[in-house]
Image (cartoon, rainbow, N blue to C red):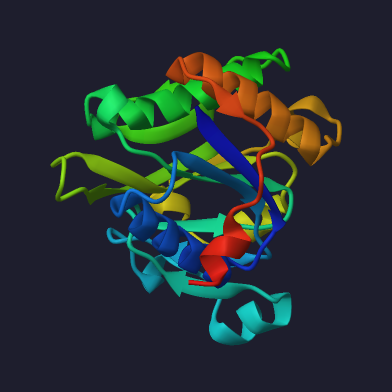
Length: 231
C-alpha cells in the first residue's frame, strides 16, 4: 500500500525540507511508502547537472514576477514549477522494483503517458531524454534522486515529476528547460483547449500510478506533513 498525500499549494523550500525529513524517517523505518502531490508558487530549480546560465531572467525580473530560485540535489538541469502544474514527490523504497532507478523513471513516464491517454492524447518518450512528450514538446518533466539505504543497500526515492496541467507557459521562456534548446513545452490545457480541475487530475494520476506500478494506493490519505514538520 502506498499512501498519497495532497499538500495543496506549498512553497518550494518547505516542500524540499519535508522531503528530506521524509527520507530520513523512511531510512529509519518510521515511514511507509508515501507520495506527496502538490503545486508550488513560481520557482526555478537547478539540479546537479544544471547551472544559472540556463536561467534567462535576471534577479530583478525574477523579483518582479515573484519567482524564487533553489539549488537542489536531484538529477537534471533547470526546471520551472508554478501554479497549474501537478508536482509529485514519491518517497518510496525501490526494493519491489528491483532497486532499478532507470526502470523507476520509465514507470513514472508511463504514468504520465496513460494519464494523457485518458484525455485522448497520444504521448510517448524521446530517445536519450527523460519525461513524457507530445510530439516535439515536453509535458511532464522527471528528475529524481536515489538515496542509498545503508541497511538494505537499496534505494529510497525523492524528488519526482512535474506534469503541466495549466501553468503559465510563458514562464518556461525565462529558462532553458532541462537544458534543452531544440524542443518546446506544452500543457494539458494547451492540447485540449480546456481548463481542468486539479483534484480530478490528481485522482486520475493516482489511479494510473496504481495500475503502472502494480500496487494499491491510499488516496487521499492522512496528511503526514504536520508530523514531519514537528521533527
